[in-house]
Image (cartoon, rainbow, N blue to C red):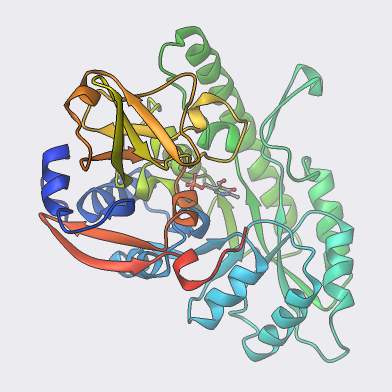
Amino acid sequence: MRVSALPIQSHERYEQIFAEVEAPFAFVDLDAMWANAAAMLERAGEKPVRVASKSIRCRALLEAILRRDERFAGLMTYTLAETLWLAEQGFENLLLAYPTADTAGLGELALRSVAHPAGAPIVMVDCVEHLDAIESVLGAGAAPVRVCIDLDAGWWALGGRIKVGPKRSPVHTVEQALALAREIERRPQIELDALMAYEGQIAGVGDRPPGQRLRGAAIRFMQRRSAAELAERRAAVVAALGEFVELEIVNGGGTGSLELTAAEAAVTEVTAGSGFYAPALFDHYSRFSLTPAAGFALPIVRKPSPRVATALGGGYLASGSGDAARLPAPWLPAGLALDPEEGAGEVQTPLLGDAAAELAIGDRAYLRHAKAGELCERFNALHLVEGEEIVDVVPTYRGEGQTFL
Ligand SMILES: Cc1ncc(COP(=O)(O)O)c(C=O)c1O
């Protein structure tokens, strides 16, 4: 992959580039995004990287990423409706990472599986009810629907009294994985092709939280222990399932864990999404640093006092625990801060700090979302920047009338 020196990301430069664009608007700095892409490929060693569509939510950029390097292989999708829509648009190698209760969608998937038995999207299961739901839509002569077992990647400490990690699959042990695999084997219309174990407590948790040294040390301890435990358990599950089924895919990891997950021999591929845009929540990891690649600009519309600049809109909070880290991060000009009382508002966001004194009505402030793809739910289009130019304006999922969640 080509990587050249990155242009400096300054307020002045972006203001020149976007001089003709009316704020609010969202953009992706392609130079930064491709530098992040190259860094992630390097961290993933030799393994292919499946691209998490939820963290991109823009069809044109998904296509561009998959074209960029053959090691970006396939998409990890997030709803069945999205998966079917992407398949309709010609995307292949789709792994739906979250279980579905959408029976109409499953019916459509079954039809697609007849047309492309080996290339149909793979759906996630973690219990018998998921298998029953799939079977309920299949006619007698239907082709098998391809499924992936979601293995819980959480870390159980103190004999299971403390459970660290996202609360997702109930399948945690080798025995539980085997039992579900045997249940699948009993059903001729369901084919087990894949295993996924996503270690959110490692990949999605920055281990260098600003101003919290002790917490950082505790996170690093937890992540080391968890990674070692998971590597062993994941290998044991793959070996046990390998006794009677050929797994095409063993998927794991995310932007925050690429080098750790890719190093496991049992893993055939890793996933990454957020690292392309590098949103604010990914600023605090010790293992890597990324370049901010996605942002949004808000117009300054009033000055309640000389040192405060109030922007229009801006309350684009990220999903999750609801802590302050879910607020957007003021970016450029450097030195802006949110007001602790008001945060980022529905229609107005006061910006404080020395830099706010320099902003006048009609200027623009640049902010970053805490998460990646959710930014695209706020804007119909992304302005794509390369060098000193806007090289394209492409629709987000929302801009195509597609809001899946
Ligand atoms: C199943 C799964 N895999 C991988 C990821 C990693 O995605 P990202 O690289 O965007 O953090 C996620 C994120 O939530 C996920 O749910």
